[in-house]
Image (tube, rainbow, N blue to C red):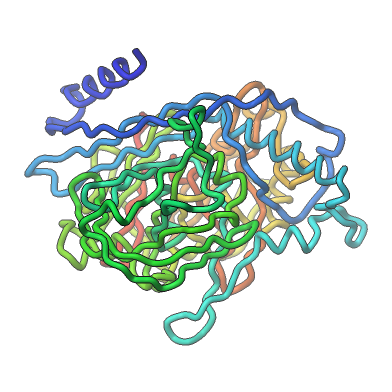
Length: 477
């Protein structure tokens, strides 16, 4: 019954004359369910501890959530294709927050102290803070490049990609904050658990089987990437990677992961099989990116992709162009400061009359749900609105105070991009998470990360050919 209702809903959206007059083929995908978890009650004894360093611990998905079948719009007049991005609900985000808080408190009771005293203040210890820092890799000029270590604990949007011939389907995070594609391989360790009870859930990961693909080519080079709690290891291979059922990237290098232990329980319980990076090949471990290869092979009209994350519903990724029906007015483009991540210069950041900062740098990152800034700056902002940190440094705010939060404004290339205070809160079950977090990224790395909180308000066009980003106010969905 649920499947029939979902098909009817998608069908009505396709033929709704208020939308596009495009013919939209519907592609089926395996529906995954996240099994319900035991109710997690909030704990508050140490919820008022002050901290200047944020540590995103293991996240656990909670409650049932259906994966919407992915589909691609397009006829001969489109010149671009679309990929549905399924949104993780606010309920799940709050449940994950409570689970992280409970685990941190349990760690304290076991003597694994995530906190310590420093100059009279309680801060995250170096052991835990190190998991939020950067790793160095050799850049194209022989110098070290800073690479943000991510754990995807707060990732909120997912879509599908297909690898091989015949196609094998995977749910991935389409991540502008990284550059490689990896999925688990058959026989992968710490890559979910499959049994008769989890077979059709997100706990049982889809795994790549090279023996089933006629387009597979052996590469064999080692692959290793560092995440918050450890490394993910595997090997590189080559195969056809198909995006939105229309863009078949041939002989694409990607990683088959053999051991995903470094992702921790966040991966086992998460709603994704792998990661598809959309940053530049200058930070790609495999030296090539899927979208970069699509451009080289002439598979997209323009070297452009765009994100529409809407508001309460699912989002949409457009490849080869952008959808002008998804935003108001005109796009305003900003040149990149660096073509590694999608990094731009920020003229300044202000929160009402209570906070402001000087010029700095930031990246626009679809793989990070919240707004991220230096720990000391986030602490100032949080205190100014009455948000309180818990033992992990995550902030909550009394839901009755949400309407009093002033708007935050990011000044970029002379223009102000403002978000109302209500956008800075993720609310569910009478719990309000403050959607900003602290992370100290050593220079010359970017100091701020504009994640999904920002991208939900502003339709974002990533112009790889001209190394620039375009912004316009997104329409409500």
